Amino acid sequence: MPVSCVVQQWRCAFDLRSSVLFLSSFAIRANPLRSAFGERQDDVAVDDQVSTGHSAIIHSIAHDYYGKRLVTCSSDKVPLPCAEGAKSDDLSADHV
Amino acid sequence: MTFLQTMCEGVARAQTIRVFDKDDESQWKLVSQFGGSEAGHKSAIWQVEWAHPEFGQVLATCSDDRTVIIWREREVVTSGHAPAHLKLKFEMVATLQDFQKGVTSIGFAPAHLGLQIASACNDGKVRVHQGNSTNLTVWELASELEPDAGFGAYITCLSWNRNRVDVPMMAVGWWRQQSGGAEQRVSGVGVWGYSSDQKRWSLVTKLDVEADTRGLVAEVRDVDWAPCMGRPEHRIAAAVGAAVQVWSLRPLASWPAERCEQPARPTVLTMDGSVPLTFWKAGWNLTGTTLAASAENGQVRMWKLDFQGQLKPHCVLEQ
Image (cartoon, rainbow over all chains, first blue to last red; front, top):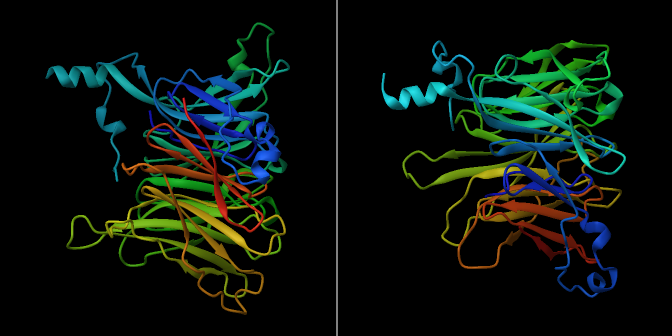
């Protein structure tokens, strides 16, 4: 799956499988000695994740000012309660 | 009625927005879900943004349905047995409808400029709305700017300059098909500033997008203005096709009295490997020292500024 969002305000957050967000505290794990010598840093691990419950790709995520609250938006597929009278043109829009 | 039609009507795409809180055991818990089919956007939501907390718990979303919706947290009386996701309620307080096409990107102005929101629209314009912090239902169109005037470019992204010393500024990314050649695109990133004397936005400087190895110009998908943190130069990163391009700008505080000189060619950061993969988003960290970009193959690449101000590969995050 493509990664559709990346937010670095507080930590790095991105979605890989559309339903889960992984947060990585790369800044804490970075080894100061190694980066001082300009070496590549590969020992970064995912240490936090959020099961968002979204069923489709997440278009955008945002942390709040304090980094304690997260908001996501997605085009979820949900069954319509009344499929008979639903107007399909409600969902159409101009695409790029 | 065809089979396909039946299928289409059975499943709708509801544009849901979810809010998560970090609890005491540092687990993320769903606390609110809203914006389903009954109230909210009618088409895909492209971006969601928080306003500064001094204006309360306020969210904005932009969508392909040509609107921007402002949401505010509402007090709820909990009965004690309410499910956790009903803990918070967000209500629609305003819908901005000045757009002729889908709205691709939004950004609240830094808090020292008051309650303002900029919206990038596919009709070729960026509109800035002025809000009222005591009455969130009132938003007036304060100003607008047109980066590629007369050609109707797609505005894909914008990012505010968050430095207090400078006049209000933002970076705007756009692209359009060139008339004639099917493969040829024109894209650009412009730095726009608001001059309080003239009461309008004007172009501060143009950032030239580099063509790829085949000589083609890709579309600009995302732009992010790095927090400057007292450094002498500003950095702006843009995700352009298979590369992330970073420009350095000299101090801008004297604009518009002094003209801002056009910055040098950007630093072009690419994936290693033979297949060019598109970057979708780019973002700086809080101190403007690490740049992360997400790619279509599921990787996030990071670059870090070294002591000479050069961006060096830092790490790759993948599944």
